[in-house]
Image (tube, rainbow, N blue to C red; front, side):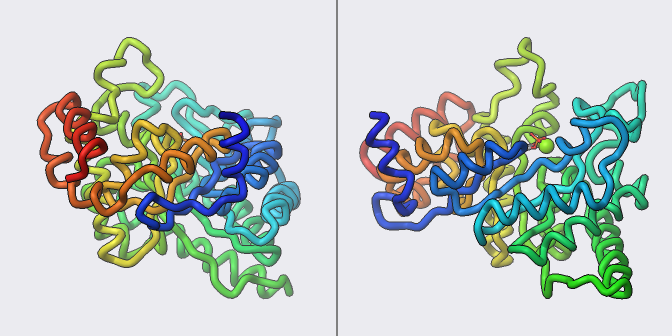
Length: 326
Ligand code: PEP
Ligand code: MG
């Protein structure tokens, strides 16, 4: 079994009926990058940049951040790297004291892009570091916790300003750099067509999206039967986001835990997903799972799968499709 999976490290990612899928790695630390490459990832789909901020007291300087992002993109040898801007707040309190202490409801508080836009000077340091690193390889910027289009407009304006300043200072700049939105707030998922006006790509963060859609803390074990990504209402919302991105012909990936959970792979394929981003330890299992799936049959079965009333019905329909086709 181990050897069979190891052989998949250099294999293309194809379904049984020959549909191409792309598998990206989520990364936090250097060893994730090595593991991603060793397992044939198509790139980094989610670099959680806040880990640079959690590791030390005080804020990392522009140069410290630049070196980290440059080494990341060089480490991936020309494959695309998606850097998520600071996602502090809620469960991720920083050592530098940016996050607000004592919020009554931190998961619904000043976190992600809300925090970055509250401190545009700190945010601009990060944007400058990313722009400088983007001369060393293909980088994309991903904005966390977007609620509405206005936040994307504000981020784009700060990036434009950072670009102009760097250019005045004589820095080399990348010609283009895609800016994407994480879809992890219900309003962004429901209003995804508006977000798409200002996003070059999307990445669905199902860890948080499930928490907010189901009103269930993602870290509370007592809510096991409620924090359940198999709930049909939740699946329909993800399917809606994927369909909207496909209609707009913009790339959409999914980077929550379910992207690396093979129990969900057929459902995500049925929804039309073609890009998955997961912990590098899961890459081979998901590639292996994809080789036995019939993409066309799953997509045809999608309407029935997502019309289900209960999570058990979803599972039952899925088993039938997997066993007999549509
Ligand atoms: C998510 O919310 O699904 C996600 C990928 O981001 P994080 O787990 O870092 O919040
Ligand atoms: Mg999240």
